[in-house]
Amino acid sequence: MPHFSLLCRAALLFCLTVAAISCEKETLNSTTGSQLRPVVEGYLHPGRVATIKVARQLLFEADSNTNTAITDALIWLTAGTDTLWLAHTSAGIYKSTDSIAAGTSYTMHLLYNGELYQAETVVPNQPQSFTASAEQVEVPVFGGGTGGPPTFPDPIELNWENNDGAYYLVVVENTETDPVALFSGDRPAPNFRTEPEQIASYELGFQSFGYYGQHRVILFRINAEYASLYDDNGNSSQNLTTPFTNITNGGLGIFTGIHSDTLWVEVE
Image 1 (tube, one colour):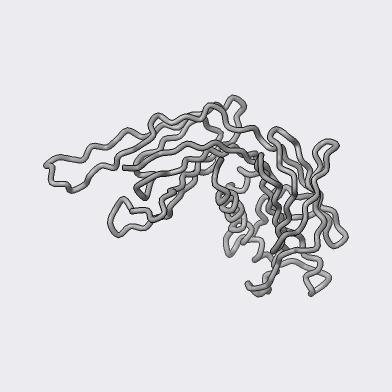
Image 2 (cartoon, rainbow, N blue to C red):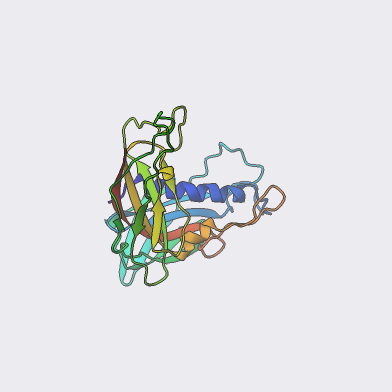
């Protein structure tokens, strides 16, 4: 089971995307902000409770320290004849008591400020036949005084089934308490992620890692709406466009399902 922090980082990715929205001026009938649209971050993972974060859209003139959390929304999910109610826990985060099921279609209903916002997604099944060609990779020694060039190891081949053209991304996390960088003076991020692609394999060379030790290699199967977050929307200070959203009625954000499988690689 992948680490819960992956969901947090997935949510963070969307926060960065939505940052462009914060710079977009809106014509509102009220200066109180009560009519600002909700921004939704909802990632459904099988075996875990549903967790959805809701915040108000920021205006161009708004103070960056403004509390945007929406704490008075009514949120529920429907799956066929089943209904999952979500309760507000803290800072605009709503959670269910029941867990999410794989292969199930969910509809989110969000009632806020007299408006109903909705979104639909299907929670994918777990990636199948996820394998690695090796469980460890050895970093070559540079400048070791051997008189010859270093020997570069073969990359680790990751493979899985993809018979239906689904999107996948790979996340690699160093799990050491006090990781040692591969190269002196270098402090790279302890993890990295690929962009979503409709692929069934990926190569991990030693250059893919920044530290020695154990690494969690997580393969995520994601939906097309999640992959759309990575598309280049052309945002710049001169050209502001609204990032992808699958929330109806003018809502912003993403409501989607993900599933994963995990392998381990040791960097020596």
